[in-house]
Length: 202
Image 1: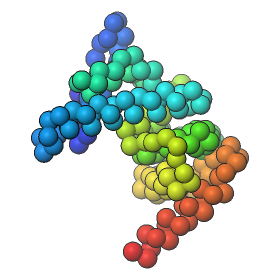
Image 2: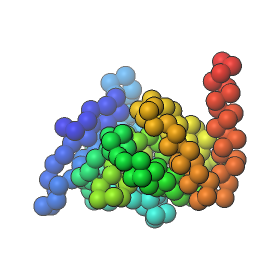
Image 3: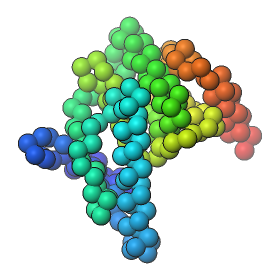
Image 4: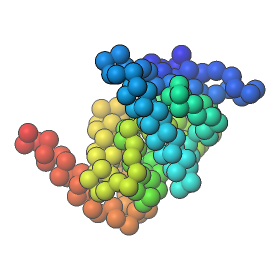
């Protein structure tokens, strides 16, 4: 077991000679069994589609080897690397800026395709051999509007404030890259400001 959350269990195992990750959505006893099975199957399929679509847009994501909707399980490529959350805090300034530029570029690629991650934090990115891989699209969606993209980037900003507070200035690099790689970034930046203002006055 690598991780056990409220929604899913993540296990490291072997599949056809490969080291893989199996993500299993956990049954919820408070739901009717048939409804629960339907919801878990639907969310599994949705996440698989998002991972594959993001990959088609040029975002490195794990290869999906198998989907079992009955068990609500996905078997995926194991990305053997370091969480960007950990790598960023110990990287040199030059390397940290390179990582942040790439984070902004990858976010822009997803948003240009109207995909949102839903939990866009440095904990859901893995650095392997200088390349960033985006994982865990369980809260993501397609056909996103500027509001949802704003939430994505607001979450990322909050992640920098909490996990990388001593290097929060690097978030400017993320946003500069995001803006240069996404022609509608101004709309999203305005939404981020709206979201922050709502938080201040509620």
